[in-house]
Structures are given as C-alpha cells and as structure tokens.
Length: 196
Ligand SMILES: C[C@@]1(CC(=O)O)C2=NC(=C\c3[nH]c(c(CCC(=O)O)c3CC(=O)O)Cc3[nH]c(c(CC(=O)O)c3CCC(=O)O)/C=C3\N/C(=C\2)[C@@H](CCC(=O)O)[C@]3(C)CC(=O)O)/[C@H]1CCC(=O)O
Ligand SMILES: NC(=O)c1ccc[n+]([C@@H]2O[C@H](COP(=O)([O-])OP(=O)(O)OC[C@H]3O[C@@H](n4cnc5c(N)ncnc54)[C@H](O)[C@@H]3O)[C@@H](O)[C@H]2O)c1
Image (cartoon, rainbow, N blue to C red; front, side, top):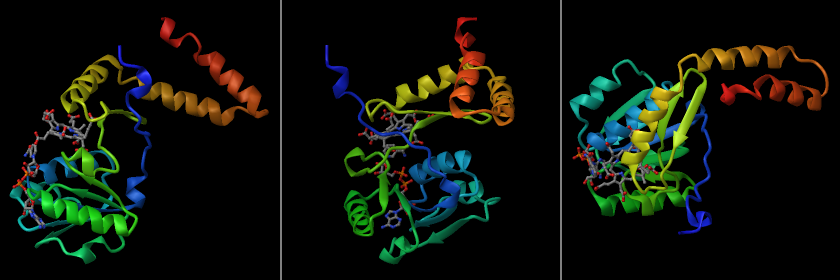
C-alpha cells in the first residue's frame, strides 16, 4: 500500500475573499463555474471579470452583484493591477501560461482552472450549513469524488448543526476564567456528541 505520507500535501486555508480583489479571466462555461463557486461562498467579493466574449449566463448570474465588474475584451497585463488572486478559465493554454507568468512576477496567487500544473491553489468542493463550512480536496485526483463526498456530507450532517454552533458560541462568550478552564469546559460539554 502507498504510504499515506505521500498523499495530499495541500495546505487548506479559508480566505476572507470579500476583503480581497479577485480577477477572473474567461466568461464561458468554466468562467461561470468558478464565478458561481466564488459568489456562492463569498457573495460580496470584489471581482473583475475580463473575457473576449462574456456569455449571457454569466451576465445573468451577476446582474444582482454590483461588486462584479464585467469587461468584455482580451486580457491585458494591467488587468492584474490592484488584484490579489487570479482565476483563469480560458480556452487558450498558451495565453493562460502567459497570464500566470505575469501574475507570478507580481507575487499573485493563481488558479488556472483544469490545469493543475499551473495552479498555486485549487478550488474545493464545499459543504455549508450555516456557519459550518467543510472544504474537500482529492488532491486533484477526482473532482467527481469530491462532489460525491460533498453530497454525502450534505445529507448526513443535519441542518441543526448550526444551532449547536450558535449555542456553543454563546457559552463560549459567557465563560469566564483562564484559558485552561475554558478549554476544559468546552471539551467536556461536547465530549459525548458522536457517541449518541
Ligand atoms: C471541486 C471543484 C471546484 C470548482 O471547480 O468549483 C473542482 N472541480 C469540480 C468539478 C469537476 N471538474 C471537472 C469535472 C469533470 C470530471 C473529471 O474530469 O473528473 C468535474 C465534475 C463535475 O462537474 O461533475 C474537470 C476537471 N477538473 C480538473 C481537471 C484537470 C485535471 O484533473 O488534470 C479536469 C479535467 C478537464 C478536462 O478533461 O479537460 C482540475 C481541478 N478541478 C478542481 C476543482 C481542482 C481539484 C479539486 C480536487 O482536489 O478534487 C483542480 C485540480 C483545479 C481547479 O480547477 O481548481 C468542482 C466540484 C464541483 C462540486 O462540488 O459540485
Ligand atoms: N466546459 C467545461 O466544462 C470544460 C471541462 C473541462 C475542460 N474545459 C477546458 O477549459 C477551458 C475553457 O472552457 P470553456 O468551456 O469555459 O470555454 P468557453 O469557450 O466557453 O469560454 C472561453 C472563454 O475564454 C475567453 N477568452 C479566450 N481567450 C481570451 C483572452 N486572451 N482574454 C480574455 N478572454 C479570453 C473567451 O472569450 C470565453 O469567454 C478550455 O480549455 C476547455 O477545453 C472545459
């Protein structure tokens, strides 16, 4: 059996994307897919979307999002100005590589959709229940399996998990005493959860 150590070495983080500036290049199927993923999670993210042709579906999807600026023309290097993250989803690998190189010179983080070798980060499959969010990665091995695990978790985690989170948060805020005491109390309240 392959050593588990050689598995997924990606480091998961949760970006406060609504505080960052995102450039999306491409306004077709893939552009729409990535835009959907971003706006579903972080609806008020500042997004500049540049594409030679922007589909009606993309236009329709962003019509209630004044934070998304659509620019219908070819990508130009100055599109990278004041940007922190870049997602490229165009039907032109050579140009994708050029955009990636220009972005790297500026120290930006880049995802070229469906081109793992050009990515600094991958998008994950996401489960959301109120304040709970779980992001799934298969290390690029099978996005389809990531989607299936998302569906499985969506069905098996009850919506009421958010109530639990809100209640725990209230208790957490009311607890006085030193750090050790708080940690011990919160652990003891939750210790039998999964045994029920
Ligand atoms: C999670 C999700 C997020 C999102 O995109 O929003 C996502 N892909 C999703 C779906 C999906 N994508 C593809 C299919 C068709 C079936 C198939 O090919 O398997 C399906 C399934 C479907 O749509 O049903 C095509 C595909 N995707 C990549 C390649 C290239 C390659 O593997 O070499 C190809 C082949 C292109 C070709 O053939 O030309 C690569 C990547 N896709 C990733 C993310 C990153 C790794 C995530 C991970 O570690 O699992 C990574 C590495 C980079 C990135 O794009 O960020 C989203 C889940 C939606 C959900 O949750 O419902
Ligand atoms: N559609 C899918 O589900 C899918 C699945 C797997 C892989 N892919 C691959 O992903 C890539 C994109 O696919 P798609 O379906 O989104 O294509 P698409 O034709 O729907 O969209 C491509 C977009 O890129 C834009 N574009 C091209 N060159 C540009 C440039 N220089 N500057 C700005 N915009 C530019 C086009 O105007 C268009 O908006 C392709 O390489 C495709 O093979 C797509």
